[in-house]
Image 1 (cartoon, rainbow, N blue to C red):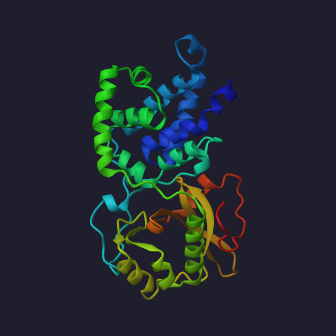
Image 2: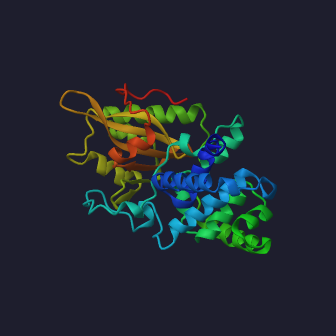
Image 3: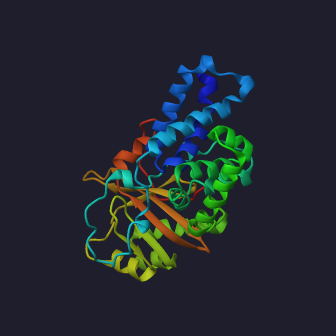
Length: 322
């Protein structure tokens, strides 16, 4: 019985992450879902629906409970206007206000279909998840179930204990909101994409500001949660990276897999030259350039979510991504 429940963990985590906007909360929600399912398993009647649908019903109720009264999670660009290079970071903002990252392996079920995998990656990107947070909770659930997971309106109505007409109405409103906020589609992971990331890593590790900035989109954004401070534009980022004390001398980038996007652990050496994670960097790429850089500074908290076996091999530069 436990094995039957556990085989749905990854897809449920992806669903709860899209609903909640936090890898930590998604893990908690799925754990609560499986505990409730285990306790109520004797009451499950397969004649009334599949085990998967039953688990999604429980997970939806768990997420709706968690979202009741909660503030909307956001990225820095949603919290206020862009800062100017050199402006103080200001105080950190409480963690429950932020979109948090999630490892791909925890949210993306395995598939042999490259097209399906690409769609799944798109729907856990930071900007897409942030756009979802603008939807009321039940609209959010309806849109994820129908447009991301490809449930029918009838199946979604049954899960949400409502009518098909209500689901279709919720979808119409949700899609209109999302069209105004959803990000552009990410660049395919082709050779040019990998080459761009390789050059970015090499420039970063050399602290070659000119080359690094040349790889950025003219309208690029850069932010560093948990601070509301963020920058827009190549010129502002050049000034920030060139400021006294801004050097990341000795830092390295180690590939990670987060939010269906290019991601890296930024590490820094200690006095003995041993590298330790300092931040998780998530990049967006479009039109042959890097369009967004989000540097999550709470690496100590994030690391257990990403590295489950307790190991942390010493990084050796930035090898090409697969």
